Amino acid sequence: MIIIAGSGIAGSYLARRLFNSGIDVKLYDPKKPGFRIPCGYATNEITFRDFARLAGAEGDEYIQRVADSVILTGKDMPELHFRSAGLCTIDKNRFEADLVSPVGVMQSQAPWPGDNDILVDATGISRHYLGAAPDDYTMHTTEYLTASAGHTGFYFRYFPRGQGYFWEFPLEHGFHVGAGSDSQDLIRKSLGNPAHSAVMARDLRLKPLFHRMFQGRVIGVGESIGTVSPITGEGILPSLHCAETLYRVLSREDDLHEIRIRYGNDVRKKFGHYQRLFSLLMDARNGRLARPANIAAIRAVKRDFRNFGIDLGIARVLKELLFR
Image 1 (cartoon, rainbow, N blue to C red):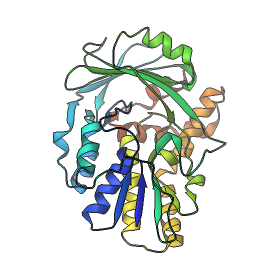
Image 2 (tube, rainbow, N blue to C red):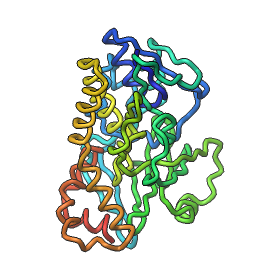
Image 3 (cartoon, rainbow, N blue to C red):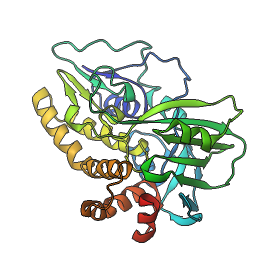
Image 4 (cartoon, rainbow, N blue to C red):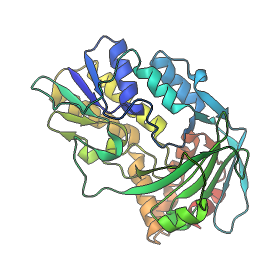
């Protein structure tokens, strides 16, 4: 039996893939139906369609707005326009609900696994079953829905020294506005005092925890093991990639030892560059960006933005955005 704890993007997708393949799976989540998890809803339309198709869904049904171009700026910088490489917003909540509809969700905490079970910790920031990581690193986000915003398209304003960014993303109706940082003062100054009913807040894990993926018969997936880009903060597609990786291993292997080896190796291969990006972020926070290794990391940063759906293209401008 595969037990999945958490019906966010990783848990919902994994449950649907296992269910469609006839693998015995049970999905648990104690949150009330319709509970809105804070999320920027921005991802790459091209890759999102691919994952939706694998799960037996039609991705176009959930795509709300597709970017023509993207505005990025930072401290003392003009607004710079870049080509979109597929950046879009999606109705993530409806997508998750549709994924789990045929599977069913038990509205309770998942039981601990028995001797022949595997429990997948898809509880995200809480790592409820894997346990807290003493070397964890998170940023706080505050975000809200509004009928209007300062920009009609996709807009990012990066805070200095890798302290996060402010964003405005268009949805089907209205906008999603937010800020993420480890400085509450920066968040407050960038957002002001939004008078909106849908103000939400959450922490976001930015450190890869690939050395803390397993605990007994518990296996982590998605944000619970740090599959969130340390540079863009994007976690939708990385979590889908991670869940697909685990699905493919579970569909081929029965032995827990082999599952841990194969899944661990595949995750490190797919997301190994996140450790370099996290080191870059920490150097920005600590004023050590002059290290030669950070110049070499520019290629990984450019790839990360493109995976998100933004074609920065010009390394010099990218350096200015991130290192100013």
